[in-house]
Image 1 (cartoon, rainbow, N blue to C red):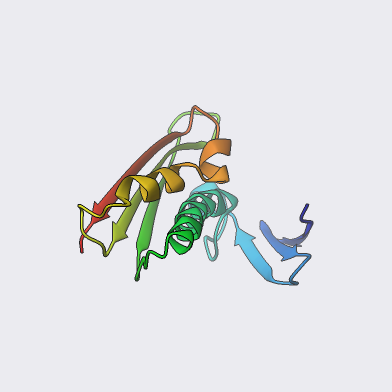
Image 2: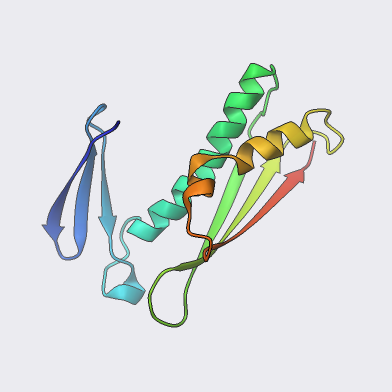
Length: 136
């Protein structure tokens, strides 16, 4: 169990504190929803959570199998619904992995990413498109 404390700062901004570490982050409502867009919005954090979770689980599996992921990157694009209710309609996740496309553990690593808790927790109406580009 992890506790997170959140305080409203006014002006559609919130400060969240990760209780175990004391790390803080600030959210801001996006410009298209009455905010200033000066920081991650809550839905930006959901998109960020998906990308970082997928890469973290891939990293755990890579470490267990002594695979060097190098400077693997993930690019996430969040699309909001056009019609009410306002929600995340689609998340596109693109990995760039500096390993050869014929890597013997490719399927293991891709399956690890797809098994991350955030990916498995998102509502089924939220489309998730995941692409792996093996460029090594």
